[in-house]
Length: 286
Length: 308
Image (cartoon, rainbow over all chains, first blue to last red; front, top):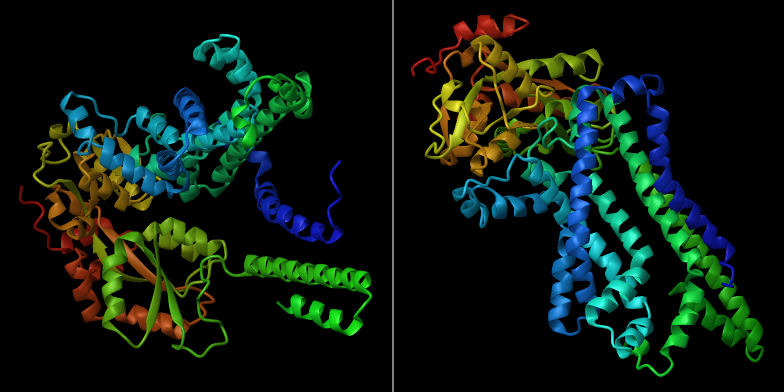
């Protein structure tokens, strides 16, 4: 049982909550609810929604496939090179999206570092849906890696060590011990990456362009609709907010579900400690 | 620091009763933190009330000319207005360069500005309709041209068959330059098949200068601004779709006199000479007279574009 927070702290707590929530309430108040079905069923809106979902699933899949191994490696890495690798991994996270887009453009664009050679082989990425997926994966993968790495660092190494002592190969340990234990963290890290990809705007605009059904995702459609029909932009914003709530909320629910079915984190920690007996625990010191 | 001093003072004053002192000091500390938090909350609340875009705009009560003038101008005017602003040192302007409709939306949303300059008439009409600005003045025109990356690698010769299989980038129909592009395509009886419809004409230009696109439809002014990074291909008949730039004082401007002064500067011979260097044409008498612009003004504007 935690000690209760001092009562005065509720003042900034309330201010913080208001600060974050009031703008969303503003959207709800200004929204022309009556026109909502009509606004959302416009072909341009449907195209944007469908494109956003398809590209986000693709980019999140890439993030998981490439980000998981990177997180595993970073969690164990020590020393200066690991620190450098960690900073480089985090960089797309803190870069302004336009910079990310420019970076992709000068790398994968027609005259880019790699794009020029690709172009010679007839492969051109710019203005295609692939460019959207690349832009989304580039900016969202770091979120997955950082979230997973954090979870990996705090998880006890007891089970893994026990399995290894009992003769399991590294692949077997990864498949049967590390990854199952990582489940809840992976779910929330994936949701974070998905949500970030869903909101991706600047890099897409800079690198992929904007064409209905091909590269114009929901955020780009909202930006464009704002030019002529602010109501429509608001309606689409609500869709984006709703999707984000589903993704982030769903991941939280999933995490809690898996934790309770495994006996909760405290239970797991206790069991983990028991497994430590007789096994040198590498993470014990940290 | 203040908290620390108080604690020391109390300790020396009360002497031996250590426990009580400590409790009182910590209570004081807590109160101080609470006060700090409260003042922080007030700051946040106040910042929330401040104008979203005109943070440093002169207050309404300030004497005219003393503060900065806030000018909302279309992105295409960036270089021209920048130079006009520098030419006159008596007044300082703060610019927000954005797409014209974005600027009008911002004004409608309560942003504070003194001057609005749009890159097309329809958007200025919208601002007038919403009573956001006063009587607008026509100050410059331009028209669309095709630009290609320098050297014209895609061998584009105009809005014709040379574009087949090439990457053409234009503005989205929702924005002024996109509307103009649609109108021009309609006039010429061609169907455009762009690979991307950008939000801003500068984004179209960016796609061309970076070599991503083979051709882009931009204004003469954008082509002039890009210099030798692009090759310009004049489109025969492009002068039929003249684009008008209008400027007006924002209603309720913090500094209306300053706004008038800036508008006078832009429309002065000196201002027009500067704008001409950036590819703008002077508005002709007929263009000023005709409300819808295009056809009448086009015949009166001398252009060399019908050559090739």
